[in-house]
Amino acid sequence: MKRPIRYSRGRIRYTGRIDRGAFIAWCESSDGRSVLDPIISTMRVVFFGKARAARRRLWRGLTAMARSGPVVAAVQREIDSYLARLDTLVYARDLPCVGIDLHRLVVVPRMFANAIIDRRIDASLKAESALATLDGCQLLRDWFVLTLIDGIAAALMDARPSPKRPLPAGRDWMIVGVNDQFEWRVPFKGPAWPGHYYLLELTSRPITRTVRKAAVDAITQMETSLPSLSRSHRNQILRQAGLSLEQLLAHA
Image (cartoon, rainbow, N blue to C red; front, side, top):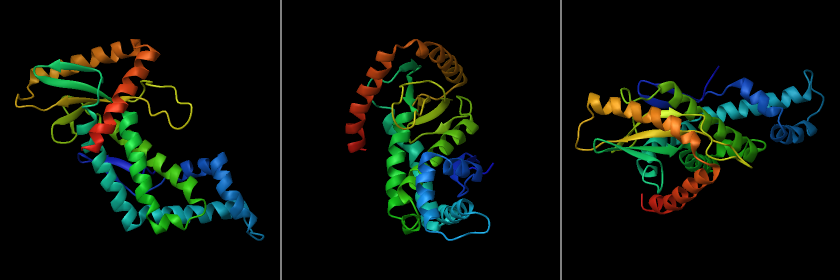
């Protein structure tokens, strides 16, 4: 399966590739049909069928856009900033946190990082003429951006960060674990974006074998304790963290 985002040699990279099966599945959705139907209505008789021809035309435009130089540069820039931005998100108020030998281990819900990159990639793509000229550009852009975000999540899972094999997250933190299942909220609209990242603080104290082992134990304990949080407690954490993030990001 072609994936738009891959983890390779310690870095998350945008490939410019799109899985055609995922695109076809989207074409069968209500959003996809609302884009394709107007195209089909303007077509004359086509040997292989209007729906297939319309889908093929949209696919050619989408893949050309995804591989264009400006889009590749813009998407890669936002992917790189995704991890670096965790250095700021980790300071949001009321996030679950434990101390390990003067290092903090903090839980950062993925929905915060995803919501930011969703807006930023969407804004970048709006400025690209290659996408603006495509049929149904708004709905197609929405699907493309969500596909990229899902790709980032999959790439980070592939990287399998751990206290022994961390991923850098800005200057002072590193990702030492990923949970892709924990339900922070029940979405009434839009993507759920469950799960969270475990970030370990870098300080003047070295990350020793003892610290790494303690981090592993702490993550295991938090994976057990977090599901016991009530729905109201989870909502309170998200609300307080979200309010403080507005100020943090304004000064970042």
